[in-house]
Length: 460
Image (tube, rainbow, N blue to C red; front, side, top):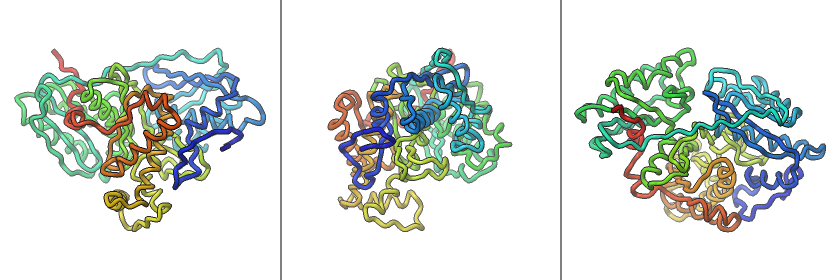
């Protein structure tokens, strides 16, 4: 197979998506014979800098392949690590093309706007000589795992909010309350819901020593900078959003509160359950949600919003409606992937159904061993096998824990089986290194809100 003059090979071609070009596989093939060094550095808050050294071809005939590789590589770095400044060191031509792309009127206008809102400063692409590349300054930090004392654990979901009261690691009370934060433009609604859950949990314990929060979104400190539960809140009221968790905690008392991305808390739950690190949690639900803890059970300080990171280079890849980009993770590892592949498998879904209802239709067919549904889940498993190649380039993964409603039932078993089959057949070293798995019973018992409760370190 060939794309932009690069020959690459995959043996386990998705039956319903034969045009799939896995970015990680293609990138490995592209780098064969590439000899011109290039460094890419991404800077984020508090002087944290991540550096990746790679190679491009730098020839006229490989000009478009060079740009495609670097543009996708930069996009992956931004959505995995985060950042407000990208240094392209060693090729002014590529740096200048990226400057035009990452602009208010460029092809990456969505990304430009997103990171500007996230860091409240303009996203910059800086052109530098190779020898002036900034030095790496990674800032991993411990996350949770504390079980002493009386703790509140809160999980802020898009359709319900869960809270647990935890005393010395034992959950003494938990509840789920339906709410509709995505539809409410007044952040007072979210604040009152959060505070109500905090107060409920507090009433079940003799005292509160700390509060931990798991929530969808990207956070700087405890401040939600981008979050789906504040989807309708106008930007001019974002100062209220940024303080919402801290203000609610202050009503409970002078106690430490830590807010973390729900993906990282899922990975933390796995680390607590299995007693080890180097865990990536990947949840396939409404979208793709990812979290990671390293071998020391630290988080990297990365955003890991891989729903918007590229996985497929095909020119025919499905477009993501929100980011407007093609071939990004949310269309391969979420309910959207099931819906995308259903008509190709011969399953017609009623367009009046919600995405969640469409997923349930396919799941019901899978439980009856419908061969059309089986093809869908088998292909998602193949997508995942080849994407493990990509994710493993950026994260040291020893355990890939698969979660979310797409992974439930027989369909999840097929995803797991086909992912493992791709790795065993074509990447035996990765197959031996990475355990692709469902959460074990102990991890399930930890639970998201209970894992969140372990986030703060209690003051002595």
